[in-house]
Image 1: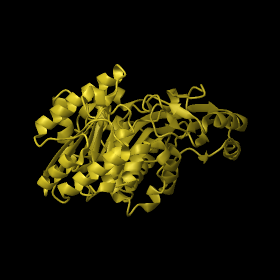
Image 2 (image 1 turned 45 degrees about the horizontal axis):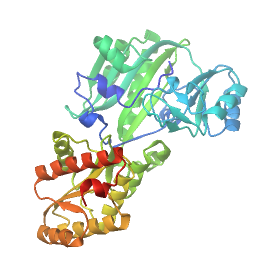
Image 3 (image 1 turned 30 degrees about the vertical axis):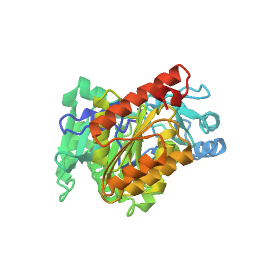
Image 4 (image 1 turned 45 degrees about the vertical axis):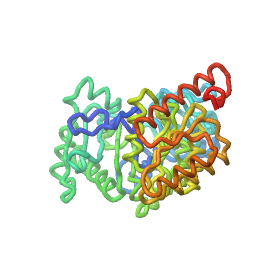
Length: 444
């Protein structure tokens, strides 16, 4: 009843609609969307007249006690506000088990809030580092007569919104897809028409709402689509969407995603961004205009252009290496941007070589080369750097690198450059293992 579904659960389950995340390199690709905390999702649902259990957020233990008192019910739930799935089965760094707990008094609300707020919750999605809990959401506990699953998202193949629904709510959608694929229904929406009364009633009926709740369920589905459309949402996931024992239609749990490209017209929504829930390096990169995603390898990549960045990571893999990051400096590959990119890459202690692959079209190769030289000198980098520069003023760039005296390997051919990056990376890792200097291991 209290499971918080993962942002990947919808995509991984929808073989029918062909919505699937990329599994390249075994790491998540950059997602252009904003996720918000559950209490904010509940507030947004209330604004649109969608039924949710009575509740509010608390930033400290004293507030938690007051919220619980205001609910006026001795049967409540306290939920750690952490942007990750699996909260209920998670463990806090202080040993407290469960980021979602049933509570029966304001005193218990205060007690559990004290143990949750300010501590990191480790779940199946956070990794060992966990994520910091800065607040808790306390709401009345409602008993579901029936539980359903409903999500609205964009289908890339049909380029239309799609409603995904299942009569089996309150559990992982991946499990439903694996064990009962026929229980998942997909409804495509004409974006110019929207969700009609007939369509919404049909979805509500197929889900299994009782006859007396069909109209309320229809209204709920249409209001959810209205949020999706008006707020530039990329995903709305309600799990479970419930019919309670007193025949109310309530969204017991909600996950929202919003398109980053719409932040200029959804300023109120994007003010809800919680950067403490995001990777600090990725936040830093975004502020510098860099597209950066950490991966699990050891060869740092600095490239301009997303397509070239993907090709660079592919060829590193083909030559037996592992990319440590996706980093696209775009058209703004200025000396300052290059230094910022290098600082981000080298902040990862696993990085044992850096492959710079720049095509000088908008930017000039000699400017890139000078920025590269300055950065290596300023940061006193010891790991090898392989630079492949092509395009405008490439000859001047090569001359700058050759005369710099820096240990930068300038290689024109992409295959040869990637082979060199993999070779030098292995040498540096070996040097680290036997505790000798990098310069010694490279013979420089």
